Image 1 (cartoon, rainbow, N blue to C red):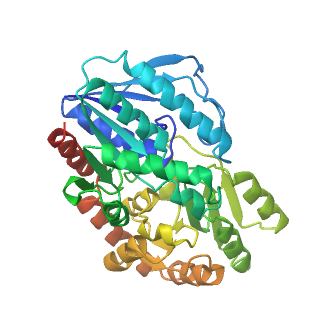
Image 2: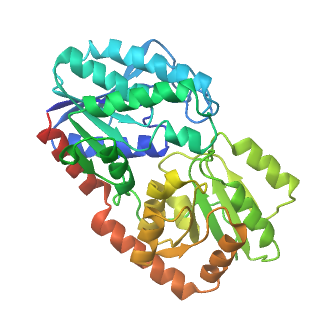
Length: 401
């Protein structure tokens, strides 16, 4: 089967959607299927073109057997809304245009929350008279409202209409959490055409090995590895570091980039924090060694009802390397997962004191850390391996093509 896959983000970008899409498509290629990806030129999250790329009208490259077509991209940081929507709209137009140069594909798959990516998939499917499968990883525009990027008004009404059109034009919808599934069913979409394929970890890639040479000796390290965006409420980590500044054996490591990075760095300096280290976004190949170097992984989100249905992929990357987690998110799927599988501790969202207390419990009990880490690795291998999840999504695609 030849699958046309539309996504705004793809390696060498290392954010969650790029990682998920690449891991799934690699498995489909290994199963003998052909996949053509239409995506942007890599620039996330800072709007700076990655080294070695030229932002031409289109470029074509091969990544591990995957044909990747990149369209001219409006380079813009992952912050604000107007330029980002312009970026999404430009991709919408150019991806439809470039689809005419791709021959023989039998189904189109588009991944959101960027609705214009899904809209492009819908148009292509109608032009080619083929089926359209929509992957929903987050709810737009509700997530924009939740983090305060936009306020209710004409733009939200327009995006809501696009969202509804997308759902009911899709032959099948793949979601990553039960919360998303319930949300779409409440909109009237038939449950038999909905599939839940959660986030996970690449168990072959995240293996034990040498640690990155970034740690000081005789320190215990609490780490956050991921996007530093408005939804992630990373300022809480700085507040926790301030509370625990007298615990001289303890260090906080924040790895990644995003719209809040500069503000966070300036805040840490202003707070006089010497127990916090920022490291820029790293290549995908380096991330496992960084996570292997930490003792506890943090999963943090703003205290918004929308995030009750989240199940972040970064959590599984900690767990597959036997790192217990402390989660500070609204009570929902993530907290229930951690409690059920005894792989970490739950702190109150946006409560630095609660988060500090949970971190200290784990830091001071090596046996507890080891047991919870082992539990996390076991459940990730059993049910959240990217290889197995990719196979499940492939089955959905085949059944609906």
